[in-house]
Length: 305
Image (cartoon, rainbow, N blue to C red; front, side, top):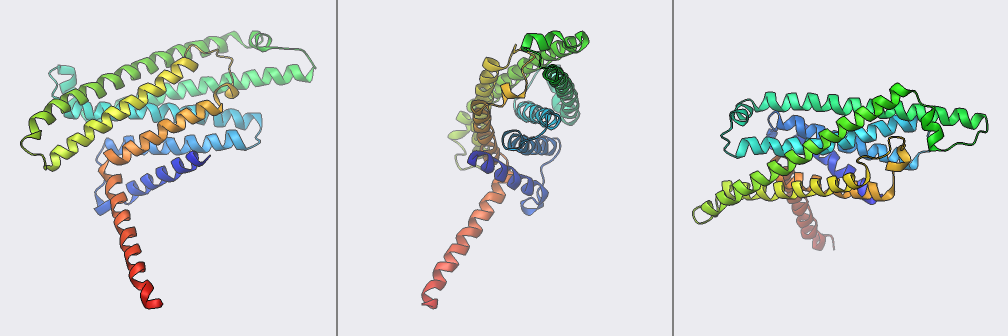
C-alpha cells in the first residue's frame, strides 16, 4: 500500500514538473509525448489497482477497471521501450538506411509507433473485456439455474467467434510483446556499448565536462531501465504468456504480481528522475529551497528563546 502511494506521489510530482518546468525548459517532442504517456498510464494503473483491490464493485465495473489496468500496464511498459529506442537512434551512429531515415525523421517515427501501439493495445483490451463480460454472463446464467459448472463448462458455452477473436488477440499480443523485448534489449545494449567506448576515450580529456557526466548518466540509466524491463518481462513470460484465455481478473490481480509490477514502476520512475533534466532540476531546486528554509528556521530559534 505504501509503495502504491509513493508511486502516485512521485508520478504526480513529475506531471507537475511537465506542467510547470524549471526555468520554463519543456522537453521537446516526441520526448514530451512519451513522458506524458508513461506518467499518465502509471497513475491510471495505480488508481485501477486501488479500485480492484479495495472497492467492492459490480462485475461490470470490475471488468472495465481491469481493462484500464491492462491498458495502463502495457502502455507504460512499451513506452519505456520506445523511449530507449528514441535515445538509441539519436545517440548511436547508424549506417543502415532504415535507421538513418528514422534518425532524420525521429518525430514521425515515434508518432507512428505510438499510434500503432495504441491500436494494438486497444484491440487487446477490447477483446479481453468482451471475453470477460461473456464469461461472467455465462456464470451468472448458470448460477441462476443452480447448475453445477466449472471452467470447461463456461468455456464451451461461449460463442465460437469470441473464442477465435480472443485466441487471435493473444497471439498478436504475444508477438508484439516479444518484439518489444527484443527492441528493448538491442537498443539498451547497443547504446550502453557505444557510450561506454566513447566514455573511455573522453575520460582522460574532459573528466569534468558536463557532456561527459551527461553521457555517463544516459549510459547508467539506459542499462538499468533495460535490466528492469527484462526482469519484469521474464516474470510476465513465466506467468502470463500462453496463459489460459479463460483466466479472469482474479488470476492477474494477485499480491505477488502487483508487488513485482510496483517494484518495476518504482525503479522506472526513479530512473526517469535521474535521467530526465526536467525532473532532476526541479527536484534539486526544491531540495535547495527546503535546505534554505531549515537553515533560516535554525537561525531564528535562539532569537525566540
